[in-house]
Length: 180
Image 1 (cartoon, one colour):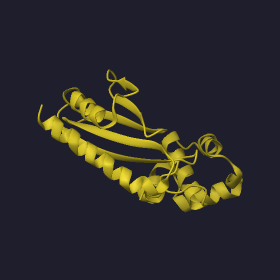
Image 2 (cartoon, one colour):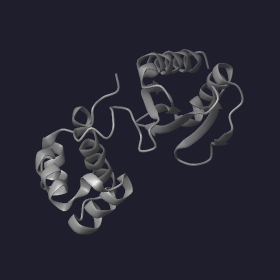
Image 3 (cartoon, helix red, strand yellow):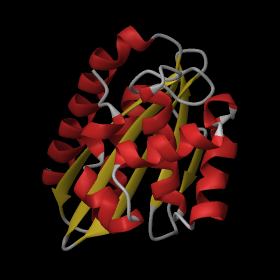
Image 4 (spheres, one colour):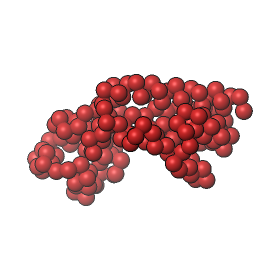
């Protein structure tokens, strides 16, 4: 099952970054009438009225929406779901880029877009009707961190199966990288 926001962001880290723990932010949002607001308005309000940095504002907003029953774990603001998996493999991003693209193309066909030149190489595939798989690779201390995210998933019950599929694809990328 996709993680609840509270499982991804500890109260200690949240308080260190924003000055408040989750329950305090939820009380602030309730007092402001945020139960009636859309996701973008909540996040923007946290930034403008309380100086919360963007990433933290998004995390607080998602956690709040989950707490009030507006959003399930793994569910995005548009009502669809997303799931991701990450793995670090030996070698530089440049060394592993071919293995990443070959493995993912074998699994999902030709990508809709590839951006290999930036620090964070990205590629996107449109699969199974409307779902999208995004791959991001970035350098991490002599390794390559690869993150796969499958989004626009209509059925939240499929998240565990799709996360396992992403993990298997990451394992295949690691094996392909070892053979280079």
